[in-house]
Amino acid sequence: MNPRFGFLLLVLSSVLLGADSRCPPTCDLALGSYFVPQGSDLTRISNLFRLPSPDIIVSYNRDKVPNRDTVLAGDRINIPFSCDCISDTFLGHTFQYTINNQDTYDRIANTFYSGLTTVEMLQRFNTFDPLNLTPGSSLNVVVNCSCGNPDVSKTYGLFVTYPIRSNDSWESLQRDTNVSSDLLRQYNPDVNFSEGNLIFIPGRGEFLPLVMRFLLGFDPIGPRSFAMLKPCSVRPCLITCVTVFFCLQIKVATIHL
Ligand SMILES: *[C@@H]1O[C@H](CO)[C@@H](O)[C@H](O)[C@H]1NC(C)=O
Ligand SMILES: *[C@@H]1O[C@H](CO)[C@@H](O)[C@H](O)[C@H]1NC(C)=O
Ligand SMILES: *[C@@H]1O[C@H](CO)[C@@H](O)[C@H](O)[C@H]1NC(C)=O
Ligand SMILES: *[C@@H]1O[C@H](CO)[C@@H](O)[C@H](O)[C@H]1NC(C)=O
Image (cartoon, rainbow, N blue to C red; front, side):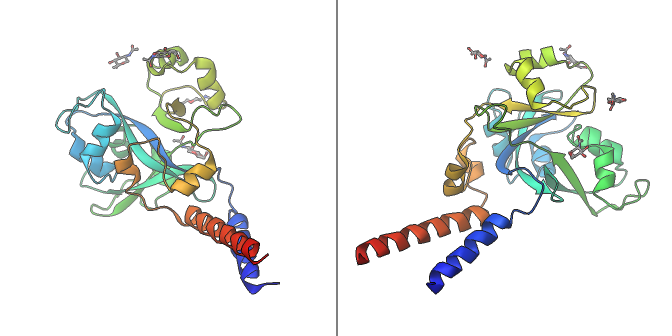
């Protein structure tokens, strides 16, 4: 066998078999529905979610946030993040939070991150004694996310992680999101609909074929300014390289014939 072809097979199989995890496919973009707490502002919020600039939040919330100096407590805004594989088991994103004096898990989960994570999640992904958090240390804040389910619908490729609040119902969510409560239930079949639990709400945007996402290296659903900040991850790059390499080989072979 041509050694180059052998190498190609090796790379290809390691790329395909390397996906040895129970995670569903990840995606470059998910949104978190964030309930703005009293006294917060966009700079603080973008620090919490490790966004390089408050302008990114503005670009995802043009209807609610006209500019970077205006955000109202009690508003719900969408925060963009990448939806990754956590512990080889489920989809989420880990934010690093720097602990301050007088922080508690409850305040961090329910006020600062407005229920996008929970006290249980903080306990699960950190080894601190919850009654003795060390100021200045970094805390793993894991927020769950979804990249959709092509079996339910191919129309949606972008999902909002939404912490249920006390007066929410399937009907009020249908009214607020313009997504039918039937479809909402189909995407959240096992959810216990009560305060503090999470549901995933499909957002606008096409369900791009995976190949397209791989080739583009980012998800064109969102504003490009944000998407471009993420370098294309190793696997898509490898697949693109392998594809190009493979096509060139075929071309060369054809010319030789
Ligand atoms: C996030 O997902 C994991 C795995 O499905 C689950 O164990 C955990 O309870 C979820 N967290 C929240 C806050 O729903
Ligand atoms: C839900 O409660 C919040 C505050 O408690 C209130 O601002 C909001 O209008 C309520 N929503 C509905 C649909 O009643
Ligand atoms: C809700 O959906 C309907 C039909 O899909 C559409 O005509 C309408 O403009 C949407 N409204 C909003 C606020 O998105
Ligand atoms: C649903 O969740 C609430 C709050 O998390 C909990 O109190 C309740 O027992 C749960 N119900 C079921 C049927 O799991």
